[in-house]
Image (cartoon, rainbow, N blue to C red; front, top):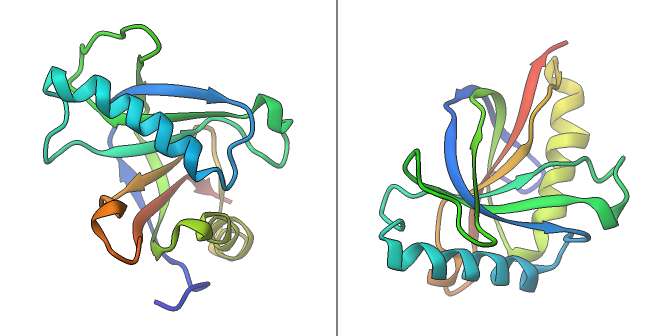
Length: 164
């Protein structure tokens, strides 16, 4: 796949029960912010035995940055956990609802996140026959980027959709 060409599949995603750490405010391009949020979340989850090979690492975007003032934007750094895992301190728990999502698969460098969102929202979506539906957008991280010497991030962007 050349960058700019979205490899997108519309599919059902089952609900996910997650533990999360929420940030309110600007986040675009702030790799240090995401490293801090996920570092704090992993430091909490590790001693509790919640980090395993099937754990999904996800960013959950609650708001549309084109509509919401950047000081009010909400993003959750999250990991999947067993249902019933209790919230604790700053760590919350919630269910991300099941739904139909446009899922774009990308292999990118850390500075390219805004570009792939533009590819999905500005190029793929208008030509797809779908529109956004209610629910949060997700980034599902498929590799530990620190393990890759070129810092390649393998990520799926998930946008809740419904037919036009």
